[in-house]
Amino acid sequence: MALAKVLARDWTLEVEGTTTGTFVPVGGINTFGFGGTKTDTDTGDFDSEGWAEHLVTERAHSLTLSGFFIEDQTTGERDPGQAIIDELATKIGEDAIGNFKLTSPGGTVYTFSGSVEPAEVGGGKNDATSWGATITVNGKVTVS
Image (cartoon, rainbow, N blue to C red):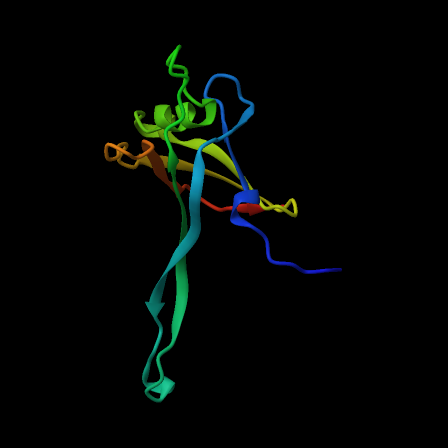
């Protein structure tokens, strides 16, 4: 086995189509971050002899994406993956939860559901238009 550093650009993100049920690649991404947080509860007592003790009571994950707004300038058709994410960002309740797959270059797949918070779209007069989102994971991430 030869372990190696991998390029971030070789990861892929897919989102499940809201009407098709098939996973669609998301284009235009140039930066992503997949991270987590945890909530601890203090379990220290007199027997802890002054040392902090805790139990992890909750874990949460999120995926932050930033990149470029992709659109056919003749037809207005959007990158299909970006369009699905933007559509999820307009939904409320259970309809706002989408399914995602983040795949490493070696083929490890992180599958999860989540809701979308859109990032600002824009730029300056000499910039490519920015696009992005934060996906808050709903439940557990499955790794296969």
